[in-house]
Image (cartoon, rainbow, N blue to C red; front, side, top):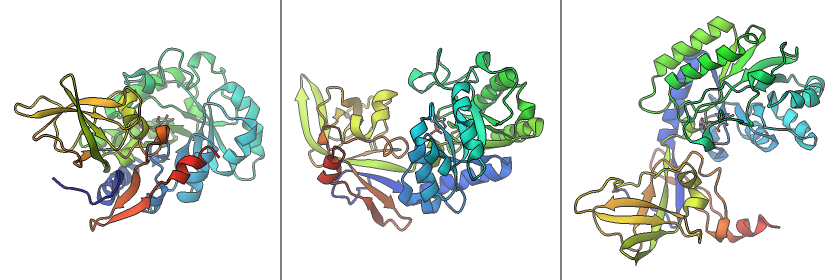
Length: 378
Ligand SMILES: Cc1ncc(COP(=O)(O)O)c(C=O)c1O
């Protein structure tokens, strides 16, 4: 099994796989006529953006900082949606956005004039709630009862305000084109009266077009039909799809303990600080060379994080030999929604960020220091 030549725990983005994803997304973009935006909330490793910028220059942002990062590092203006904007930040949002999407009619009323008065053109949109989502985990389902995300058709004004040029919906998560088809159907059912007035529709994120089983031809046909039917531009804003299966988190075994027959390998990374989705979703990540199904004659372990949160562990994995101190444990598919969510909780050392170039050379993008930890509070 490949052993990574790194001194510390590390996230490693693989150039070859990242470029493969970009090329698939560009192909869908070109064939469907939809414009794809990068959702920075999933992946914002801007030192790798030179691989994207020949093709993707715009992002979707959730506020002024993401919009600014997208503008500075991808080059284009952002399509910005925030659950609520405040007066203090709004001019910065405008500075870095081409599209601004509001989550309530009150917010639209408060800020639309700022958009109209802004020096560059701002296209105004509203986020609506399609009332259907295939996502089963409430934490990731924007259509749960009473969701704060997206205006329900029940409170939409009868006439769309004349300044509104687009509608936005987001209801998917690691979903396929058939889920999108059902969502579009629900969206059209609720909001069809507004559609003839629109210039664009943003179908949110969650489109896992780089998954090996994704039916890209079906998606292309779906978007083409929608564009033709309503005569609108279509925007898609996936995040995970860009970084899907593009790299690993490499960690090391620091201790192995046995408590009442439960063997735990304690690592130099933490689930809560470095792989939080594993605990939030929750899901058990793939560990290279190990099985989550029982293996006869295998050696079973929990993997434990190095924070003092009691629940900072997941198990069980079966290995083909006993784990020893110093062994490398490699978590697969650890690039999307990891580096954007990490914390310095407990003062746990933050993994390095590397790019594995096509040649195999590991380029260090960032190493974190004690000062990074300390300065968060200064
Ligand atoms: C409004 C919006 N757009 C896009 C995305 C990106 O979704 P994904 O990374 O699943 O493609 C999200 C994720 O939560 C979102 O909330």
